Length: 158
Image (tube, rainbow, N blue to C red):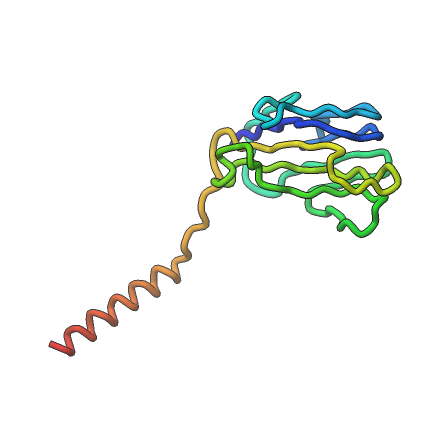
């Protein structure tokens, strides 16, 4: 599977960065305010990483006041602690299939400037997909059992 990370923009007073698998992919300078086009089909920068398997993605945002790490993201109750949220990418037509999300960083700076626009990164699955959750074998057994009961009931009637 290949993931593409798109840097969509930032509005931050801090120097923030986005890391994946221990490698810095994007960094912003302090007092930045730059964004992609209106629909963000053309990001400011992109990096593709191939040969990935399923599982928890090893990414984090690094800020001068701390890190927001996938799998241990703090809640939003302390305004000076960095955190992020994830949303489906409305601009990407594949969003409904679960192949594109956007991460929004609040770097915990600017005296509690709680607006989650300090850095935005889109993650896209380029080849491969997130397959639908398969129906467990027990589900098929239940369907077969109900079908069998229907056949037996029909024979008793006739």
